[in-house]
Length: 191
Figure 1: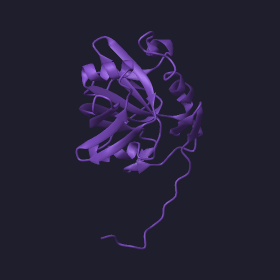
Figure 2: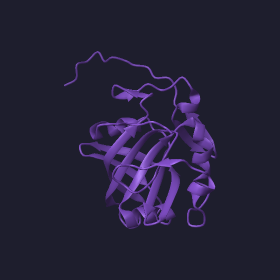
Figure 3: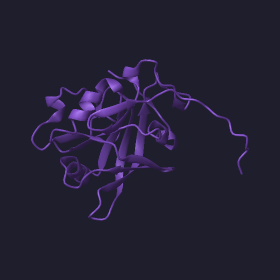
Figure 4: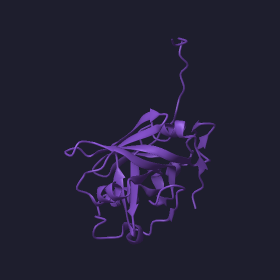
């Protein structure tokens, strides 16, 4: 099982500010679903908020609307195929968790399951939805977790193992893994 540590909510944006693809999980009653999502972004620090785009015609959106919550996680390279495939199968017709034999664990405040082999996880409560013609949802982060081997002292230290790095989706099945970081110190003190 993937280990995780709690992250202060004000720092939850650090888990995905580098632009990785995400997986959204949802649940309501005895129904659950999982989908890949590339269009997500942090919105605020305190309270911690995120924006996600979930098509209003999807099964995931139906479950998010009914429950008022969703899970957001950032997959490692080793589950890139799963990330792609959960976006290609409808949850209305298939229990994707069983179909793909997805290993999950429970969060602390929401019903949506969380999947293993990710670098970070967010528990989110819906606080606002876009106008009826929009697919935008704003969620407040109510719990945040990260891989303790890679998120150290409040920032990422990505593994040398490329299978454990976060991934970025381009299109047509093409991904990139997160690369090497570098640091530049400003010559200005900032005002």
